[in-house]
Length: 241
Image 1 (cartoon, one colour):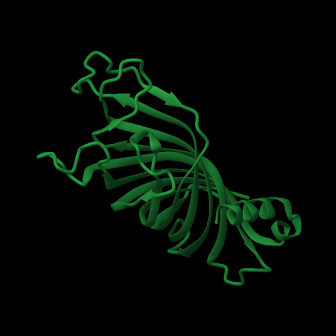
Image 2 (cartoon, rainbow, N blue to C red; image 1 turned 180 degrees about the vertical axis):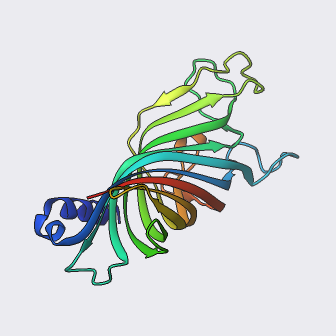
Image 3 (tube, one colour; image 1 turned 90 degrees about the horizontal axis):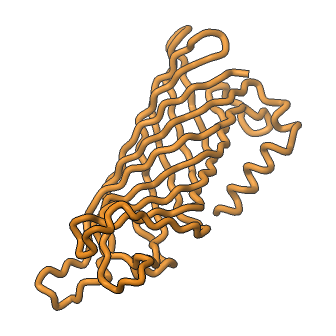
């Protein structure tokens, strides 16, 4: 799927006749934020221990910035209300889950973290529907597919864990990870700020999300975690070409 997404992005940017025949187009910057709850496997506590739980519960918070190009290729779209969107940007996915991990230290004791994060390159492709409510306002609906590639990971030991005194010594890794995928639906309102500019606010509902599990927690990196519930918002500033 990620190869298909890369093909779509390269094709749309390089095939000029497709873009040249677009009726309308715009460049926009969006600022998404997404909250989720999540369960992860406890690979450290023995199943016979009194405090054993198969899953550890917590929450996640993701935020980022995306640069998007929206256009109406006549070869594909005949309805003036629909736009194709392609984009790229930065996304930071933070997990607030208390769990042990393999801290890079010469002292071999259990280390715990209650927050860790993955900085990612985000690639996206989607479809937007826009319905005018007059000269200044319009309703918008989006269906987007996102692919996340992590280039930097951070794990912060907790002060309350047995490694007291190590709090703040965050471990940074620079592994290249095909980290996650997300399909989201959003509904919003857009307001015109003149002939060229507009401001939009959307409520974002991820309908499918998966994150690759991390072997720093003794997880199998060929498996994935999924949130139980997700909801977010996005603010978009667009310049209409």
